Image (cartoon, rainbow, N blue to C red; front, side, top):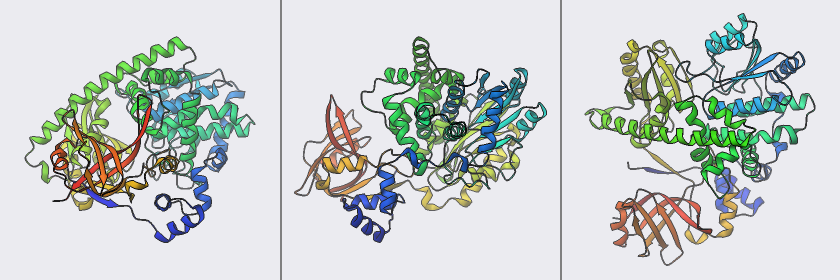
Length: 567
């Protein structure tokens, strides 16, 4: 698909003033301003994160009430149930809270709903489990903000519920004992974009502060779990999340918990883990348990204290994830075949596909891949327990959650974010939903949102790329949403004659600016451009700068995102 190149705007005056203060390459000042960093002090915080930059947990509404209730439960030896969602954010949240409080309280249990039998969120079955096991307090993590019925049922059973959730609340909140969610209307916590696990971290930070426990000894070691949740839940990596991610990755690389160390040993990566490595390496293995079996397998690994058991669990997750990849591959092929046989697909503004045999555990990944391929808001549906369940993904700029919300009367339930949502409906409502959703997208999507856009941070001459430039660029890490690895563009390039095709699909490049610097590059999926290169056509390209580490030899290279040749 042809991409539209768009340069990210920035305030030139702010960038110039910042350059005068920082005395670094002007491009870095431009990148900072694009990321909302426009003063010396904010740049200092950005480049030098400190744990002291974390906000006071008691600024979060409900924190004191939650901390005191847990303290009361510990003193009175009440049984506490740690309840969490089945994805990476949920499982890391459960592991964090369970492992932390297990040091102070023997009467702990944990519960993760079955994706297929119970679905997302606090379930009635989960409350029944708590009641049957004499639990009088539930700490619900990464879920609960819309669980009105389940929490009301818990109240009837004399079970208090503490909700720690980061999803968007409805106008009316559930009647929980306390709610920790920076997005609730009257919460004045300064940072709103924490992951579920990060809110769990704020809870233990608040608990440690209230009961004068050591942050360094008791709280900081939990940051490896927080870093994984932040990476895999795709929350913005600015503000407090940047601090948590920075120190969480540090913890992960220097002193990870046993389960993560064993998992990382299996993956065999020799260099330090960054956000991307977590998203594509660790995250899928943790997620695989909840997708195909049960999320408790992932939590068991994350809280493991015995090496042999941890190794067995890690190997099991590796096998489950391979099975997940095979299933996903087959469904993506089927989905593409359906689309390619649809004579009216090109006219449709959204993709809505349903097949009752598709595996519920992977439909979200399939939806993402369909968006990547066809660049349309997409919902992939399957059948589960007599209902039709769907996973939605969107294109940049289009709010798929709000589009689904306009079909609320046709749904059993729904939830999510602007770009990713889940929904359930009765089979009898499917066709009506499909038709209305297509209409809503058609009426509201902007023509520019229908075109794949490649956002470029700055033009760059290859001659400026050197070890010093790379060193400063790496200080922008950790990279993630709202602080993506910068995309640069260079023009007036020509092939040196050394470029070649790899595996019939990819290009291994050696390019040169006109009578200037030469750089190596890799262009995945651009093999068809080899004739234009060999014809010595001038071209421009967009890329991210990366370090290629091959057999211990490190070399900077361009990872190409798009190329344009002069006609």
